[in-house]
Length: 318
Image 1 (cartoon, helix red, strand yellow):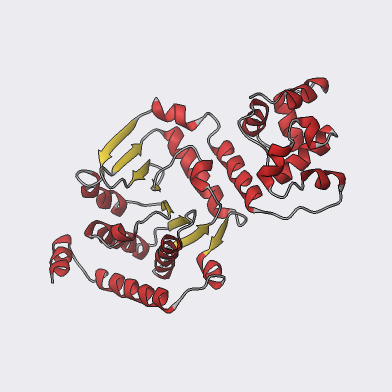
Image 2 (cartoon, rainbow, N blue to C red):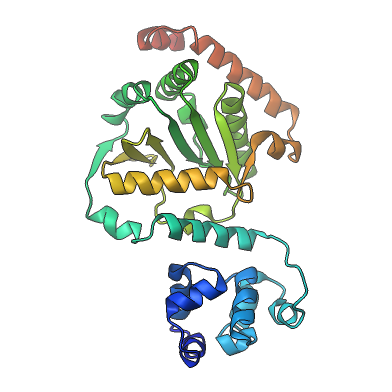
């Protein structure tokens, strides 16, 4: 339902929606969602809006709903205390992410993806046979983002091990390899498996960051289980469905630039991404975690000496 109060407050001041967004310090797309009633601002942005309009939240159409969004119903009291400092929270991190998405995908990525040049391949039957050749040909950099779904089984499959072998070859050639692990699951086992993989990748020389924004996949306009940017030639979206895993290749320069810029900005942002060593320093990792880490690193050392997929397959059978 349209937020009539916010809309009227803007009209009364003879501001365009773009001007209102600029005054508040949010993107036009975010402000438009507020007026359309499809999104409620988080605490810090609502405080900024109240100051810009010189009105309390209720007069802008953000009453109990906004209080529920930020928790504890503190918005009105925060507004009346203009000198209060609002700590960066998960809700403001979520909004930072949404702003980042709006900046890097300005035209509405879902619509443009539907009308663009996309090649869809079956992950098992088609993509696995060519991905490692494409990764091996990477010259300027490989950037990948991994969500913390149950990928441990895939990393330990022949396909996953071959993929890691090609990554290690890139590192030997001094080609930068970056990986962001997204921790969004409330399942402790899945989160620990993701941290284990992140740490192992870090130890072999991959640049690793960890993002812990709650609801990450719901904040971005695509929901792959993993995506990668290969040089600046194409983007790969992975969907690891147990029934039919798929890979979508985005081949248009526009989408390659959008995904690449989004990835790079997120990787650099210390408010949203943390290095794996810092994350583990604040995580209670038991003995089994470190034992599994050693096992994975030992495996990668053995893989580094394997010269062919045939040899790898034979080793699996032993």
